[in-house]
Length: 545
Image (cartoon, rainbow, N blue to C red; front, side):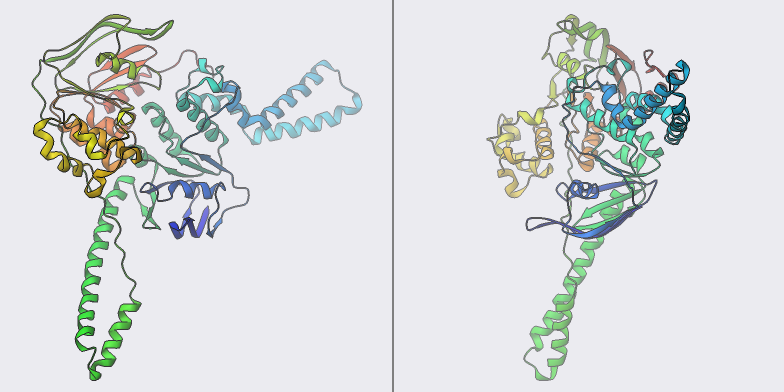
């Protein structure tokens, strides 16, 4: 168990948290929540010793080991994937090699008779250690973790520095999970995971026999693995018992109670102050006046926390279109000798909400660019239906905002004439109010840029929304609003997302790119997920156990 008492941390004069106390039990997964900048990542770094606190103490059993996953990491290793993750077991692998060396000596008889007993004793000790550490399961463990995170057996010989940043993060995570530290500290572990890898990690963490503290904005993931939530709020840490969704409800109820208590206290102070002002000059009331003055001075004044504003919006009414939105006939795409996917055919009908799935690099974004006609197919024909008007939210859409514009200037640019009077109302809907509308785009956070990009989409009437990772940089509440707006949208939607809660609540059909082929499932993601589990269709024939 980890016991933390009176922990405080300041960044300059700014207090992140003050005198927070909590404990994490063995075999427990705890979610760490709070607004951006509240100190979540800092607490993880303090727990694993990467940062120091300004005060407080951390008590844990001697010999505790920590594994920390930061949000971003770059690995420059030239080792192969298998050799890199095998480093975790370097001591055990060394013991196994030594045992094999002694076995070869015994088999060949090429040893000094005087050393026989010494070799035998050494061999016995090595075997005991190998049994204690379950060394015989090393290859199986490596296989399970790498496959769970999306690596195929053919990737094992690829060098680490040849993988993209997202895949390198998976390699780093794989090493942490194989180390099986006493305490796993995971900062946004699902950021670079596709939906299947997230599902696998959920199962892994639910069975993890030690302590886990994690930060995540993925509702389904958090609901699945956590039963206790720590929230850094107003420089303090509150503990909630139950699921993440239950915590979100209780959090709003708690804030409501704080506001009610604040109003009550304000009325009490005003009532006493009125008495003080009225009778301050009366000698016969002096004792009563002083009593009330002292009462006000001793009061623990309630400080109002910032109340989270709620976004509420809907997409403009969809323009009428033909029944068929997209038709693809034997469409294939290659870049030189690299084949992204084989010839595939599909039709998307009006009103469908299609999620496009696949591991990172499978070709999801490529297929989207073909549909939006930003790319030409290598072969085949892709046709857009009658009167279809596309609105495209690219994965890097927020990067296409003009950094020299103000927030208001960005939405006013190319704004339809009839929407101009509604711009401030629209921005207020997306939490840009007052002076916020004059902020420079260049200083906006990732979440603010994403909200601004979606707000711009509402100025354009369309009937076919194509969205590539629209939930990136959005917190749980903003995701909830977006999924509800898309569920109400009367037009057609094709989107990419690795957020299972978002996908489960929006998609009515699944298209998945797997090994260059397109799978088409006419149903919800949850139905597709159950189908895949029953049929084991993702089994890799090249896997070696």
